[in-house]
Image (cartoon, rainbow, N blue to C red; front, top):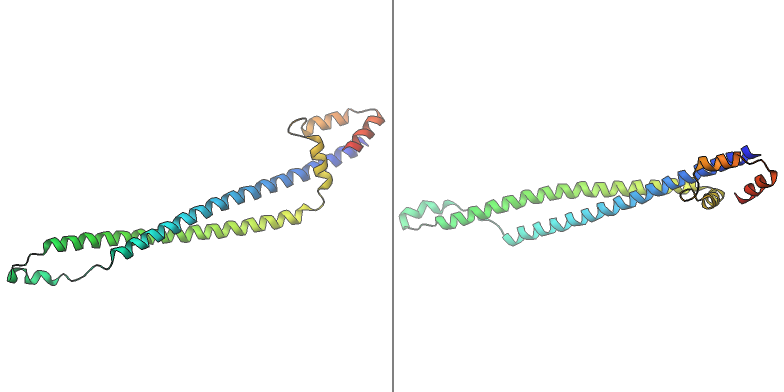
Length: 174
């Protein structure tokens, strides 16, 4: 009789452990998804900022043939050329930065999508595997493993019972 009670308790505790592991997995996936979504939002914000900077910068003139008439008309516009050159270099840098941000945005959006799919699969598995956990959860609450006894202590206690009344009381309680 004691062995059957112990076997039942062990089975129930394994079910509770599996349920707890699934719950922890779901919580971790939720946290990972939240973090990934925040990072994705930050990347979208960065992309918007760089695009607005590029638009504010405006087009860069590509007319560099003004140097031909410098000697003829004594028109020295080298300062304007330097400004155009600096503006062109800054624009190229911003365009490279935008390309990097867009690649990062693509990677992060794929990660968010992957995490959502994993979370959905984990929820589906948890719902399918939930079955009839009522007795197992009830036993787990009564045993209070973290605070009172662990599995080995409980098994040792139940195996040591000799009085039929105590065995029946424990069976009814669990």
